[in-house]
Amino acid sequence: MSDLDQLKTSLLADIAAAADEPSIEAVRVNALGKKGSISELLKTLGVMSPEERQTRGAAINLLKNEVTEAITARKAALKDQAIAERLARETVDVSLPVRSSPAERGRIHPISQIVDEITAIFADMGFSIAEGPDVETDYYNFTALNFPEGHPAREMHDTFFLQPDEKGERKVLRTHTSPVQVRTMEAQKPPIRIVIPGKTYRQDSDATHSPMFHQVEGLVIDKTANVGHLRWILEEFCKAFFEVDNVVMRFRPSFFPFTEPSFEVDIQCDRSSGPIVKFGEGKDWMEILGCGMVHPNVLRAGGLDPDEYQGFAWGMGLDRIAMLKYGMPDLRDFFNADVRWMSHYGFRPLDVPTLFGGLSV
Ligand code: DAH
Image 1 (cartoon, helix red, strand yellow):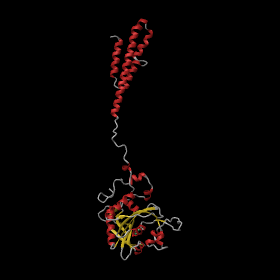
Image 2 (tube, protein in one colour; image 1 turned 180 degrees about the horizontal axis):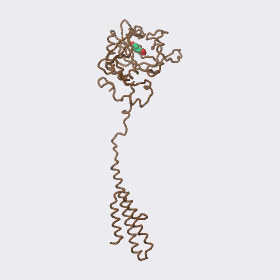
Image 3 (cartoon, protein in one colour; image 1 turned 90 degrees about the horizontal axis):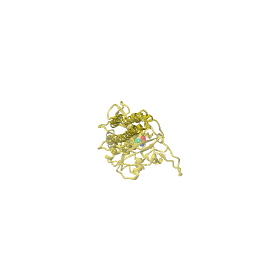
Image 4 (tube, helix red, strand yellow; image 1 turned 135 degrees about the vertical axis):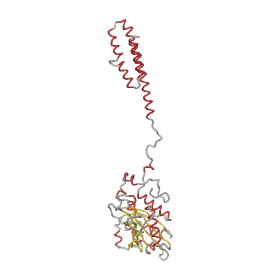
């Protein structure tokens, strides 16, 4: 076997053995690179006699062409093979969800959640929902609720007054949800069983007070409604709302112009373990609402005869009990619209609170 045949056999074997693109490139450099075996042979062409160039020279050129072709073919095959391997390795499962749906990501604000929880509880007791305007007349906010003209109780509310309108009437941002009591009495005949969730406004701002806050009001009017019923309803409400089997409540005598007698209600609780207060146990008391029997003057303002009808009402701040139930330390965060706070404290939109399915779980 001539030296050229030997070289060809060995190079073709190397080409066949090259398993990837870098190895075939190495074979190419070995054979055809500057100092490659074939390149060295080609350099000898210059010193050959014309006869030798015709025989040996032609054989070297033939070898060069054969090896170049073999390398090119092998390179193409290895390239295809590499692509096929990558395609097999890098498959994408397009059936996997890329990002969660808006319904998954959106959150219900804790205040909306609390309103939904409270309305679920009272709806179960046969109450319906009533609403009224945030911009209220002085009459409904104060006068109809038996606040006498110039009475200091009006000042107690730190009222936001609007500019007088063309008739000289000065509207207010309602300081409580109680004005909806009289509006409802005017609009519907007893028996009345309503809850009134809504926004309320007072000039007050710190970690536990915001100039806009939320209340829920309750009103029951019929011919026999009494304090016993009021007490039962509030107890059932607190058990359901705080999701405990028992609550201990304390009714303290108090004063509101629109109720007589009036009470403030405390609920027994345990404040020893941080921002989340435990209800239905413990040694502490916390005031949660005001209530009482509707004052005869308020019934009259609503167009009802106090000798025929009687009723009770209560009013409760929502923001603070939301903070207590869900452990938020600062009220102002409720209104900062910080999406990180919302995704931490917010509720999943499809988990609608119901008594049978659970309020907050
Ligand atoms: N309106 C009162 C307030 O904002 C709360 C209140 C107390 C409402 C007693 C009532 C009630 O309906 O009977 O402070």
